[in-house]
Length: 130
Image (cartoon, rainbow, N blue to C red; front, top):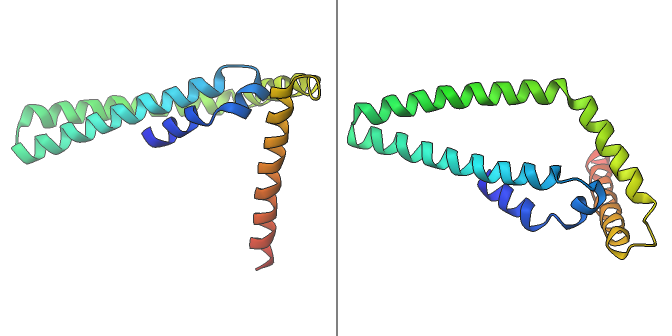
């Protein structure tokens, strides 16, 4: 998750321009933070098991339970509000289409997205043909 978050932040150029909101960057930063926390928790559990320190293992267990609760809550919220998020993203992308041809950054972003979608579509067609 840490590597995915770092890659997303470094390659955020076209999606950020199309969406017009900071949701894309915020989700990437959240991935970086979550990846760091998971790495720390893993280190805590490994050291606790290696050194056989009961307090570290109990702390590891409590943090894992809290993390499970956070993941379940976040997943539930995302599932409940997925339609609203989809509508908002579509509105933002449609509003950026008006700038196509007038703003070079938006034009490049839309062109880049179309190339990426075309490549993915062609790959899926080749896979289906096999």
